[in-house]
Length: 361
Image (cartoon, rainbow, N blue to C red; front, side, top):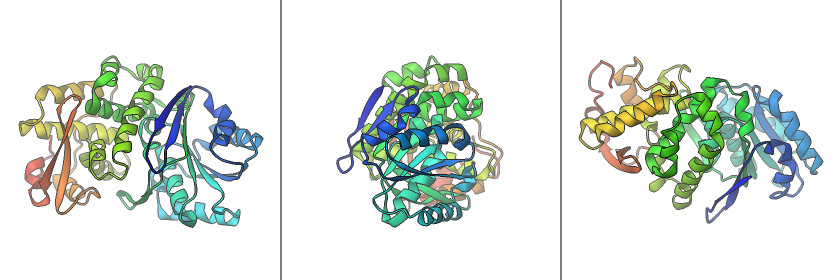
């Protein structure tokens, strides 16, 4: 088992990575929590696979488990589903001495995390990510949220977990598209930090390679994210680099009507924003081509879909990361060399090349 420390001054915690850790969930949770009532929250894809096993392990370690499930999919990241889960917890008598465990992918982590952050103004949280996207990215860092309409993650809170348990064995039950989706975030981290992870990414050319190297990829990606979050927990400065590919990515994801997964949209967004900065002479063309080649090698999409530039622009301008009439765009000066360019909102259309009704890059 690999143990990574996330040393946030106000709330340090550990990420434990190892195969077959789900069977030891009870003892792992007991190492950070006294026995209490726990809301074990999963979607209806993950619940039949793992919820009973995890609940049994928790019960053996003295916890009282209330298992809840909700419909799988981004559409469940809503106030309605949030309210339904909170109502069930109220009916089961949850109070501030109890806790929430998110067992599932990124949607589950975001939704259950926001339940924990908002119920009685905050319950302790543990993340058990079962998708590759959640294991390498969203389970670490404390972001929780729900969507409003097509606006992603607009209502949320920061709530650092008390523990993150990563079991790579859960990836074997993912279909290929779900596995590959998470790899988009791995390539993002590799582009931002270089070091060992870019060397490993250069050797991956298929979904099989991703699965074979998932444990090491998770470890390296989480190590980098932990360093960034330790330095900037609330996204006031350095943490903004983690938004590389997300500004355009979130826009095309929202406009895809559910046809694009998050990691797929981020892949498109990384290539699109890199091409923009290549056109402006700030990102070398070789860097854009390397990103494109690494993403395409596992069949992640790299071309902008047929969407209206006006619609993309509207989504970009409404991005929750805009500050004081400016949009901070993350780009790469080189592999391992991220930078941020602040662009006035009135100039964003010209800068991004979203001034006509033809698709952008």
